[in-house]
Length: 344
Image (cartoon, rainbow, N blue to C red; front, side, top):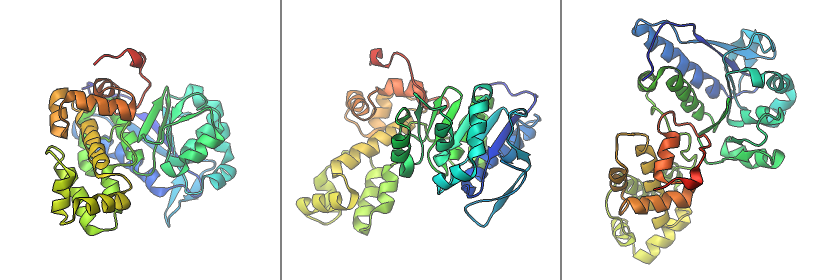
């Protein structure tokens, strides 16, 4: 853990504009506020000085009934250490009404320590040209549009958040909390980030490489209660040997009918769903660097670590070992040199 000490707070601007997503602004603000609270409890000075910024000073209406008061107008002189641009439901309209933010990004990108864009806020960075040739993510619903409009960007639709040098992009809404927690961990260490996550009753982090399309979300969307119950049971028992016949019996259906209905409801086969669940569980467990890879494979229900390795190669093109090296500390997706040469 990084040593905690008294120092000048990091300045953070949360950049909003008419129609911004309220939760995307409030989530990171809360993370930094709780970080300050826990630092003060340890006898330390506040770590973050957060301001709401916009194209002009004054109240800014969000996508809800709530407004935030921008105490600062974005400018190229009084730069914060970090800036976070939130997203909007109608990003095209937002770009037209808040185009000065794009111009601001062009001017300040090389001079700012961390510049983040949440959800569809990635379009501000893309429109400024600073993401060209880089990997980025955004909310899955606008990922295709981002890729079509800016083909030079490598859009990772699967990631929770991605770091490319000083630029950070995240998936939608609550992923901004994950990104802000990664900031806290990078600045003050894992222990403080864990305290903040516990205070907010959220996970310390969903790794940056974790999928936006989780098996848990898939089970929530399933219409038939009996199939949804089976999905939940699978996710709670991934360490066991699971067969279609056993699951069909639990659902009180024939194997053939169960397989057909499951695929129809979920969109993937039963075996594919099981593999996805084990893959996601293994990715979460890999964040704990104290757990041996063989034990993670066993806890996740893989037959052995070689089986887990093959699944990771198929789904990510990298091994569990390399995945851990990329994500285990801050959960941030970063390009890792020498991936092709990485050994088992």
